[in-house]
Image (tube, rainbow, N blue to C red):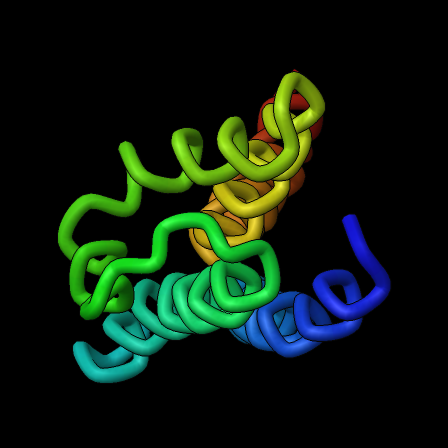
Length: 130
């Protein structure tokens, strides 16, 4: 990736990191997130990635669609791999996996922490009863 593209991806990475840490804290405390917080954890990383893709599309000149943002919002699971392949060639799969990881970061971190808490709590109970 070019230096400009990598630099502008910083916002998406920070958004995904914030959502992942906050979701992990919710899982650690076993608190249920409100509807708006859950929506934020789902939508914020996706919006950050879409904004990065729009800026990167201007840099690369690929996908010069009038309303690329809306098109990405509607069909992002299909368009992200297409865009990565079109702009990066074969190494585009790494970009695809990275962008999907950013989008799913909050859910993945919640899942890992929640299962870890469960394993520690009920694993200890299992060994204490023996």
